Image (tube, rainbow, N blue to C red; front, side, top):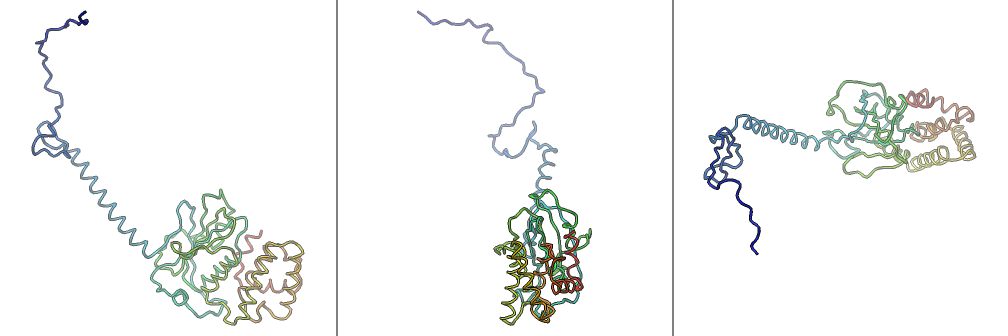
Length: 317
């Protein structure tokens, strides 16, 4: 049985007149035609598209130049992470209470052509008071570009924490004018962390270890092995017993401090040292000032009279 066939509904020789106003695509296979060009009906390039292509080429050229400039800057400076609320500060050099003689060049074994950044991540629930004191001493010794940042992991901090490194300045400072960058980032971290070379150096953890690093930048580390050992002992005692210990441990440390300060004005003798900075800050942070023995209270008053602890007291209120 033959298949069903549909009869044609129009004659096969019908002619349809197409309008001449329709856009005609050029033959991309034609010889001499550039496939990358947008051609008009007569083979010419659309001026608007040509202008857009020229603009794109100019933008790409400027982006390449900008990338080259940034790559050059990264060879001389290191900057902290973005996504931070920034407050920029600076301090002029002055005479330091420490008697260190070495400069930043000899301490680090590098030339002073590039700014060196100290980047510290600290939890705002426990401000590193001793590091704030040492920051002030560094500002007396070097040209320091200081800044306070708020990391996105922290919703907010009290205003004194954002101004703990000094008064706010709105001027934009050129980084090449400074020898040292001191960046404090309030961040939700379990332990204080510091990086000196933000690209190559492993982080230093713990307030005591960072304080030891900063005192070496000041060139004020005791040269006598006995004094250096005593300094480390006092620092560890303050951090692990005063700051983290119970009431009995704190009372025992206060008695030891009182006995040592009965023999000399400072913990290592006649010279103010890092041991005094860390121990005094731990006593203040633990709230033991009013109940401290007489020698300890006299010693705390002497520390306050130096002026280096002025940045600490607003954070204790």
